[in-house]
Length: 179
Image 1 (cartoon, rainbow, N blue to C red):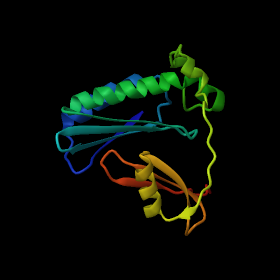
Image 2: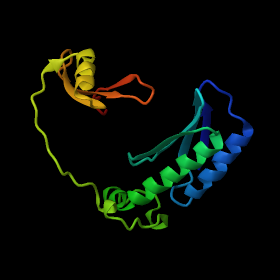
Image 3: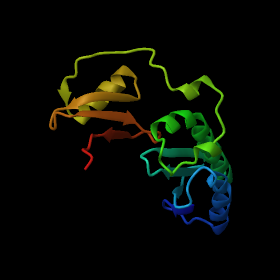
Image 4: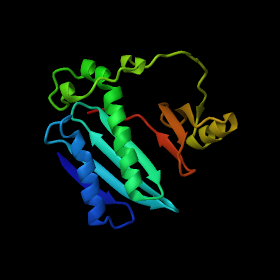
């Protein structure tokens, strides 16, 4: 297991690198040794932020982002969140990726919750999708009071999603064909 640590607009102290590497060793039993875990450190105002991403070769990606007043607390919260994700989704991932050697499912504890059986769709909506540009879609999203909005892009005729980011700005998701 290789931990890649980066700092976004900041220098990452050696003690933080050691701490995140130590905390992430608990995941060694879940993944093959050639897995790469990415830990990115940053700060915004008084928040110390850590983002940990585990891209698994079978296509799944585990990700946790946490912020706290102290970077050490952010690391602990993110590692705990990842452990819960791995445990919660064990059954679902095991069914989908059976035969892949990247994840060692036998090492992951069973969740024991109903959520382990998968999400339930409790409501379905259909609506007309008027072609619009991302700026208009953002305005519609804000008018509706939602944190995301699905729309047909006027220029590309493809389905896009605009969403509100935690930093108060907006994001745009566009489809891309897999090659």
